Amino acid sequence: MINSKYIYVENNEVYTSLDTQSWKKYKGLDKTIISIDYFKNQFYVILADGLYISNDLEVFSLVNQNYTQGYLFDDGSNLYIVDGNKIFNIQSGVENIVNLSISSIEYIQTFFFATVGSLIYKSKDLKNFYLVKTNFDADMSNLRLLSDMNRVIIYFNDSKNVIYSRECTNTANLAYWNDVVQISNNDLSLVDGKFMYNDQAYTETPIYSDDRSFDKVVRVKANGQDKVEAITSIVPSSFEVQWEKNSTYQLQFTAYDDGSLAFEMITTEAEIVFNGQTFIVKEPEYDYSGGVATVAVTATHVYNEISRIRQYSTKSGTLTYSVQDMLSFYLDNNSDNQGFTYKVYGDFDKKKITDLGNNSGADMLSQIISSWSTAIIFPNNKCIGVYTPDAFDKNFGGRIDFGNNSSEVKMTIDSTSIVNRVKCIGAEKDTTDDSSDTANDTVTYYFDPFMVQDDASVNSWGIHLGEDVNDERFKDVDSMRAYALTQLTPEPSISIDVTYSGNEMPIAGEQKRVEIKAANFVSFVSVIGYTWYPFDSTQTTDLEFEN
Image (cartoon, rainbow, N blue to C red; front, side):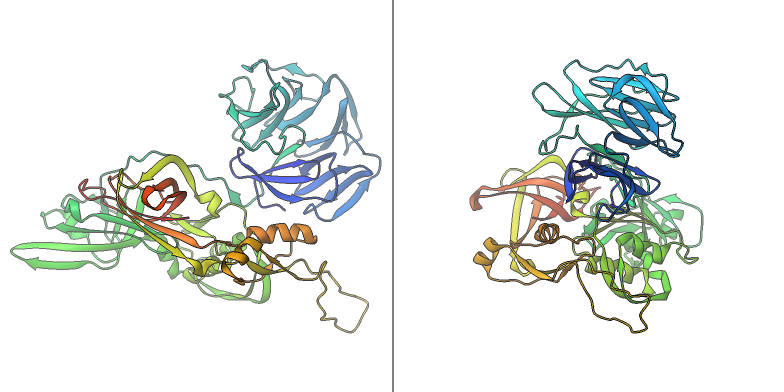
């Protein structure tokens, strides 16, 4: 199944989205889809010669040659086809004739909602439809609905064929809709195909906020105790938070003995809670001089405690895994998982890994990072988040302008990351012959492995070979080639270290527009590291960016 909660199919193209607004092409099909629906964990597809079923939109099996037109939809229990004013239940064979010529219809909560031009109707029984009074503008046509159980989004185009969306959070009546949002990527219509919500998908949709307020109370809980105390003796200038992508996440501070219980509780393995995140004291350094006792603390984020988890079993051999598969193998049904959970954000392909297991949770995270080179591990306490760059990056319109709001900018250009040529290996054919007594170990592919390169990069930098792109999803050469080109890194990476003329709270993964006029450099870069002094406004925030 496609690893995305939001899917859109139009003609012979499949698109996915993380946020219902920015859609990207997932794959092209060699068939033109008349209608499609995701029903009981399978795709039901109407093609020109009948109704088909598919698990992956690659292999299609004919179900019935009688269905060659109409619009597929379901209510979780039954699959229907609507054709104009006729609604046919494929399971029961019952056909209803209604007084509407329906263009699309979806089952949301306990009602069926049908779109007719710029109008929405609802029905409880697919027999009687009633007009839903909405706050829609008149300049709308070709309504299409997408529901994700918490909201309903409607897509439409105006008289100038510009695509818009509106959102309704009351999934019971669809009367009031939020303001119009224009969709920027008009290379797909979004009003001629079919939206599907996959509640079985294991990717999550991240929700981001530009709110930079934070809890200024730092709390401590001693190891093995339940009592939590606010620390009142922290030296403000000593408190700093450090984060670096897939590496450091910790805080440091110095506190003095003010006679409080909180100071006594700052001991090895104590929990320090700052702004909703928990850190574990690992290296307290006590100093007794001048009649004053102090403690210098380094506390690492609690997600690092995943190193204490072990998976003693081993999955022998070279097998294919998703990110979800790996997290599940180590954390699900593990009596020693110590409360760790996980979420996956974004669409990851599958990778082949040999002899998975018999090591720690920290080894698992290292394996994820090495197997999926673009993966970003970012935790929310003991919930391990694994992100694609697209899912992790967020843009709030921030700018870095050297000489204006930054006092120093250091730029490093690294060519070691260039990959401009790779070998492509697609899906293997099943050549098993159950009637034969002789094992056949010959591997046969749908297409021969081939090389892909970025010619412009090769001309500029020479050939830089990368790891093979081995993906069993692909049985078509052109689709494999298009995907492999997206996995290349044709240009050197640029790392930028900025001394920011301010003390605002940094946000991991935030994109900012960086301009260095002296170097004639303008680009969007993402925060991949920072050092922040939340209690001392005289110390500027240090930001590390990556392009």
